[in-house]
Image 1 (cartoon, rainbow, N blue to C red):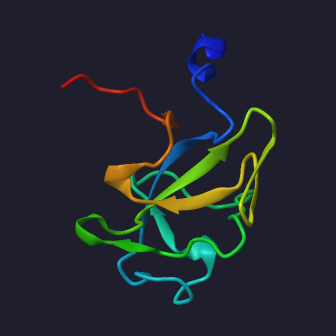
Image 2: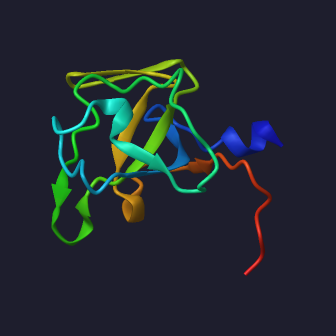
Length: 118
């Protein structure tokens, strides 16, 4: 199953949404330290040990109706890294993204609770 789930990951990589959203008091880059910029949405999870953001992230970019990048994601690269333009991102690093427009071809979710049906 894991091999099938990761098959769509291409050279641009993918991400895992971590269930964290930007704190209202940290709307843009530089106001809060990176590891204090987000809160866990489940109300149970705590801590940020082991997290590391891509250089100059989270930057809180704003894009029209999408607003500010308010979700935290962990980057996934089957090669272990991605280089594109001036970017050098490592597998496992974090980035901020627009919650409604996650920009990767495949987005996974890390959950600590059993999913419910709607």
